[in-house]
Length: 245
Image (spheres, rainbow, N blue to C red):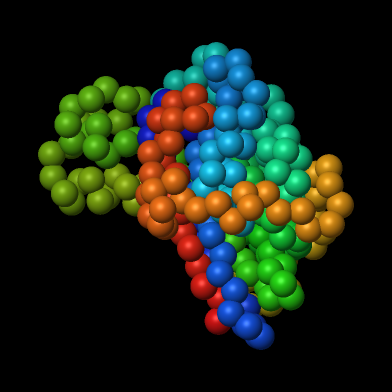
């Protein structure tokens, strides 16, 4: 979103664990348009996801930035790249199409069926071999951006600041409403079906449970963080292996 590094969040919540142990690899990936901002296709983005060995990916910035993108105003334009990415992988996808403080062209893709979404579309229910797994994928606003406010870098109309207390206060003003939405959606998911939207799931292209990645591991050989430049600019991919009881 816009042109500075934006905060994002990826959460996982389990419902009624049963049966044998299952391990999930969950990835959060800001794809910066999936190549479209540099006139490319989704091939490099798909390659990065395959290399990660992820089972579920929370995508941010699946649509293009407008030509007049500024710190204060930068509405996403064009179609989402989520369907094309899911199609290439043979996965399911869910575009998070609501417009609110916690989303900026977000989507969830998964090698499992995707079901109901939360009231503000921040989370989706995923059927992992018969278990309900909730994944929450958000993209927080980057303006005002507190590191810039503290270091005197111009970015939008917000004033420069000097103290920790000022930074905390501005962070709450900037991202507090989004975090309130996230908390409400997580509570709705925890409370069951009340208020949840059953949207079924969309599977792109292939039938059956075709798995891409073939068990490939994280490029570094283990879970953790890795800088990835395959989508046209440096971004941060978080690989989160999760073990289901």
